[in-house]
Amino acid sequence: MATVLFLAPADLGETVLASGVLAHVLTRESDLASICVTDDARPLFRAAPALKVFTPWRNAARLVFFAVLRGVKFDVVIDARGSWIGRLAPAKRRIRLDVPKVLRHRIEEWTEAAGAEKALAPVILLDDKARADAAAVVGDAAQVIVIAPGGVTADKRWAPERFAAVARRLASGPLAGARVVVLAAAPRDAQITRAIVSSLDADGVSARHEAPDLLAAAALMERATLCIGNDNALTHIAAAMGEPTLTLFGPTDERVRAPYGPRARTLRARSLEEIAAQGTLDEGRAMEDVSIDAVEAAALDLLRAGGLR
Image (cartoon, rainbow, N blue to C red; front, top):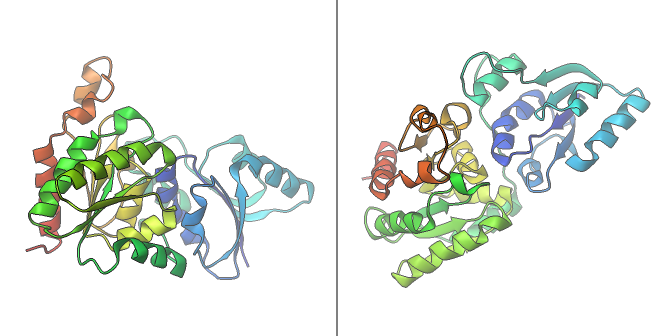
């Protein structure tokens, strides 16, 4: 039995990107994982096969303190926070990210840090509860369009009315009859998701907004024909589940933290170099420059690549 301490990132998207490292070191069901994570991120690891002890991040220092006091040494410490807690935690082996010397994706960094031979793609395992929660939302719908319009800050969010416009075009055209589900990644997104659903309903496009836990969201993504969203936890989850995922980027760098998966694509209007050349970032402008037509075209290209006729 291996004992593993996983100090999860504060950012939910980064937590998804680091999930492959945890799966890489947990090789047996008898392994014991102590997972220090935010309450929102905890469901992501609910179905992991290893034995699990969840500790809220606010109690991480106490957990490490008692480990030191009792002379306990973890077989592996995965320090995805880069904090003093991770440096203090007693470990036979420590996996953490150093300051990058070159510009590359976070998955590449984690793969090198863990000494893995192949890319450590995100791993999200589902349980029956998550699948049941997803089924209650989408029922027997043959096609599902998921919209993930949230974001931590306003400058990372595309306008709600533009998401509604793209969903309207797709649900009235190439994905006619698809069920539209607008997901919130956090309570802060509720107003945005309701606005999109209201706009679609007004035009006769059936839609619903949901705020599931992240594992239920992953089960929903497993049923999705297409997911379109901002750089947030939900697009990271959709990509990790292997579904067609289009993520819109503005002030953040997709070369480092794009959602990772076999059918994930990103879209931006202007390069980061162009944005930086302005001297100051006009909040929201980087996202405003992404057009409805460009998003629709990119979504259709992604769908056709996946076999849509």
